Image (cartoon, rainbow, N blue to C red):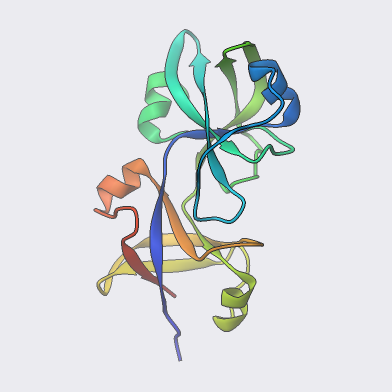
Length: 187
């Protein structure tokens, strides 16, 4: 018996996660202020933004997502890669192997990272309860459907704490005509 589950769609726009050292160099502030909380518990969009630069190409006003991490991760889409003139790997969040270098510009300085730039792999955030209930495994590939029409596969991402939600980028939003809050099925 196949168990399916409906979950909402979350659209992930370009953003950066910063470690404390990079945050201090870019902002020289004591904390990362909250603009709004995201669906995933403890995650938020900050009021702070940075510019990304590579070989003279710049993308302005890239949102910093909190809280502060123990790594730097910069997530961009295919069209943003074209603007920067780069071709980073598509990776699961936190997997920075083979990620590309990037320059980040903040109000107090510029940081040149030797790695951290990726295209984020689409994924389904699930809680431990959902993982057990559906007999799934972290990183397992599942099929995504909308109105009984197959769209694509995505990998499971165990989120503790978490909120069951599919994350895709802005280009996948357009390609598959999915929008923030739409519901899809996966199994």
